[in-house]
Amino acid sequence: MSAQNEGGHDHTERHDSQNVPSSSRRKLGIAVVGGVAVILAVVGIVERHSHYMNLAQETAKDAIPAVQVIYPQPGPTERKLSLPANIAAWYQAPIYAQVSGYVKMWYKDFGAVVKTGDVLAEIDTPGLDAQYAAAKANLNVAQARYKLAQITAKRWKALQGTQAVSQQEVDVQAANAEAQKAQVEAAEHDVERFAALEGFKKIVAPFDGVVTSRFADVGDYVNAGRGDVDAHGNATELFSVADVHAMRVFVAVPQDYADIISPRLEADLSIPQYPDRTFKAKFLATATAFNASTRTVTTELTLDNKSGELWPNSYATAHFRAPGDPDMLILPEGALVFRAEGTQVALVDDTNHVHLVNVTVGTNLGTTLQILRGVKKTDRVINNPSAGLLDGQEVRIVKGTPGYNVPPKKPASKPEAQDDASKNDTRAMPEDDRPGPEAGGRQ
Image (cartoon, rainbow, N blue to C red; front, side):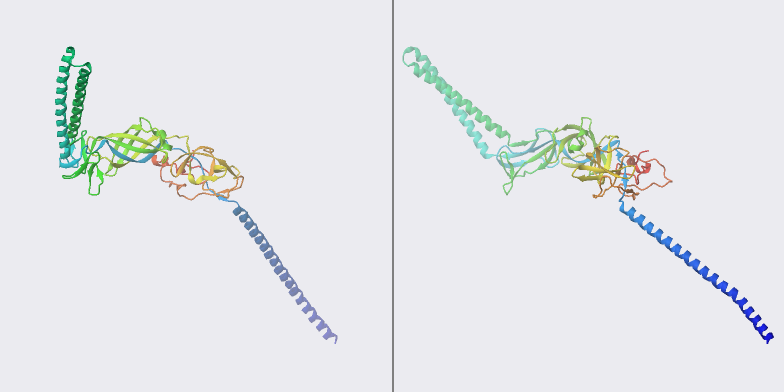
């Protein structure tokens, strides 16, 4: 009995000794699982907090407007201006008939080279011929009457001392002789007038030149002072003659560029029929007054045309060159803000806050504008500012993308030197808030 109890007691002790390690392992496992859970929870909380913080930062960042800035660029060293021009003959004369009649014959056609006094056409004037003949006949009558009046006056003058005639009668005869003399003079002037009209039967060239138009044809009826009359009653000149030894060039210069006009002004002319050539024209005169409708001033140039290559009424493009103003500051049109306070630009200070300043705009250069007052070379100007920007508002500066106002960066393999065209390109602007040589910024 006691032996059995002792055996059972030993079995119980062995069983208990086996249960002790198993319980410890269970507790350890629970502790490990709990620790991992805590770590995961902490990591999740940290990640979520970080996500919320990043989201808050991005939201705050997005609330600040993003802008691109540019720097005012110096003006070009040379100003270039191309304007439409009209080429005219040195002299151009439309020729009308001075007498009425029918075209008897024409002798000069289009393109004929003529000298002063060359006959261009003849007009048959039967009515004028009859009037001329009548005027000469009236002159003969007046001369005969004057001769008779002179004889009569002399006879009455001789009888004055014999008391056969009164002094009154003598004076009457003397006055009659003077009146007949005046009639002769009037008849002579009438004959001279018709003789001059007879001279207009021949249409002649007024100066050396070229016949540029002819509207007269044999048998056409022409009116005095009106020219050729067509079937519809419309009158045109009979001929047109142009002196083309030299040409006049007329250009309408805008008011913004009127300062380039001077006696030393020259222009290179491009003419469509000579695409590979240019013609040098020199200043001749200017109107010294602007057209009220177009705000342009007519400027006249001249160029030699002894070769006859240039024709009257040709179209041309006049290319002018004038010294530029390096101190001039240039901004693109998109940088301007138009508000009730006036024309403004938005500047960004060192703390990235906006300041709206008024500017004075000078010459419009097309896509860019000359700024006379309000900005400096070192100012950072917002390009294409939003209409909602406020003075003092904070902004963040971003890099611009290459485009019209922001040129692309040049490859490193290319030399730094630029050609003259790029140096004078006032449209190139820097791509960020730091001026760079590739963008035409300050060094």
